[in-house]
Amino acid sequence: MAISAGLVKELRDRTAAGMMACKKALTETDGDIERAVELLREIGAASAERKAGRIAAEGVIGQLVDGEGRCGVVVEVNCETDFVAKDESFQEFVLDVARSVHEHDPDSIESLSQMISREGTIESARQNLIGQVGENVTIRRFERIVEKNGLVAGYLHGTRIGVLVSVEGEKIELARDVAMHVAASKPLCVSQDQMPADVLEREKSIFLAQARDSGKPDDIVERMVDGKVRKYLKENTLLGQAYVKDPDISVGQLLDAGKVRVNRMIRFEVGEGLEKRQTDFVSEVMAQAGKD
Image 1 (cartoon, helix red, strand yellow):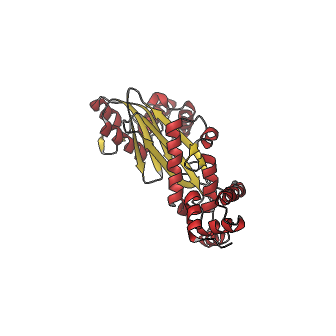
Image 2: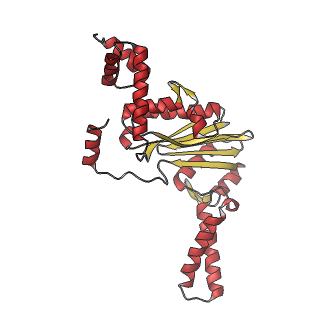
Image 3: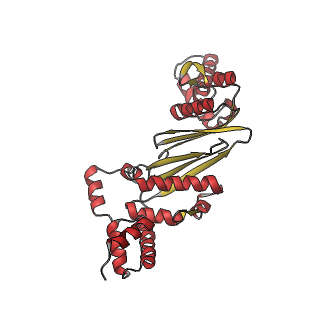
């Protein structure tokens, strides 16, 4: 049977699949739009399975903070290329994931995947998106912060870095400034007592080896190591760092002046710690041209 343009458009609006994919599905199902929807979902699921092993280290950081500033969410969703990360459908999926985390507070990626979204579950939406963009798409991580005694503030640097901070105190502009500082300066923790012991021991061993190479006496070596440790803690804790907007003061001094306390901070950067996809431009174009 002849497939009308209106029927193709209706299927495309319902599934967000490409026009040619919609027309093909309608042709194969003799114009039965419900069967065509199911067929496109099956194709998306099969495509997702085939692409599951491919490296996805690009992507988008999504963020939501409610209007009262009491709850905030940050998520990372990955794809294979920066090109797909800029795709409108991909970015809308990231927002759907963030909304689901915000509304339902899932305890794992597995439970998040079964949350209801605009297109059935988050997992079915992910599979449909894979079929649409032709790349592996993964939900890597998410965090949700609720602050009952103060505020949650967020900062996004484009779509690649996202920060949430929870503070005691009602100064939202100050909280946002601190979130921006975290994005720029990458503190490892809020205060010195929160520095992981294994991280500190690793750095101390490096400082000790460097100091011993100087050939100085043991008491001098000990003082050199202590000084380097103090400097390391100052430069890598939020409260010790020089404030990015005014390097003459520390973030701790800024917060003390504003009578604000930071309880928690979260910083996500796209792809940090992930294996990067290695390819050349010609290979990437050829792969896109021959994608299934």
